[in-house]
Amino acid sequence: MTTPTQRLSADDVGLTSAAQLLRDGALVAFPTETVYGLGADARQGGAVAAIYTAKGRPSFNPLIVHVADIATARKYVDWPARAAALAAIFWPGPLTLVLPLRAGHNLSPLVTAGLSTVGIRIPVHPVAQALLTSFGGPVAAPSANPSGRISPTTADHVISGLDGRIAAVVDGGSCDVGLESTIIGFDAESAVLLRAGGLPSEQIEKVLGQPLKRADESKITAPGQMLSHYAPRGAVRLNATTARPDEHMLGFGDIKGDLTLSASGNLPEAAANLFGHLHRLDALGGGIAVAPIPMEGLGHAINDRLNRAAAPRS
Ligand code: TXA
Ligand code: MG
Image 1: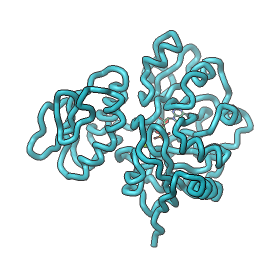
Image 2 (image 1 turned 135 degrees about the horizontal axis):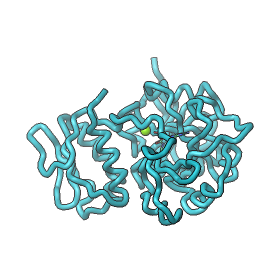
Image 3 (image 1 turned 90 degrees about the vertical axis):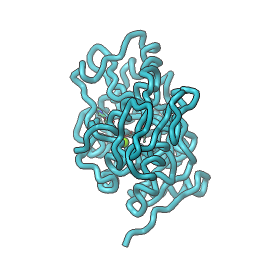
């Protein structure tokens, strides 16, 4: 028999329980500004392994480590000047930096899938901040959904995907950004965009004063960026202007849908609605037809997620 997943409140009582569960090696989902994360103590191999079991992840992809502040981050990674410049401007926030592991770090090798680098980020969501501060250590957290399914942007999404498979979820309402973090790595010369995400790459390029290299032009790759990902149960058809009889329409701008990402064509609003609307349309059954989304700003990350949702399933 499985124990149902506990729903914890985002107040002192709930956060104290959540931090204790993490110390005990249990899995706790929590809100961040991007999506809900499925957290485990990144130093406990057994706890990190349980993430893979709960999600049904096929292989050990490297996980992002979440910390409360830069001082804690520096215990685990080397700190090149280029990383410091980005962190100073964009942390806390929806940016993950892939950096060399520091000697003497005590992270479980399962977190990094055996790589010599680790993805690290400081979320800005007040509930994530409070939990990380109360816990006082590094929390490994992928998105809190079964592997290959749509990412969760509410506690209800987490429960519907993982009930009975994780100890608890801290309910902090819905996520503002709604897309996973932008992931940046570094090769010898340049910063490399490993995953488009909630921080538009144009903003990063402005700070760097030069274009980001794309992962396919660099030796660094983002493991685990599987083509079919974020997938609803039904088929997804992109760049549609109307729905077929067996589909529901996800609209944008002038193209109205059963649900519309943003009637005014606002990309941050569309990003925040993306996974929630996909969850709701998917629950209706049938396929999903999606209106075209412009390739600018957050449109890059939105189209990346939609392309994965529409990709042939393996
Ligand atoms: O917004 C987010 O980033 C969410 C929230 C919960 O923080 N987390 C998230 O984690 O999206 P996840 O596990 O779904 O994505 C982790 C991805 C990996 O698939 C990989 O592409 C990249 O981060 N990554 C992590 N460590 C890496 C490394 N050392 N080298 C290259 N890529 C890495
Ligand atoms: Mg994910």
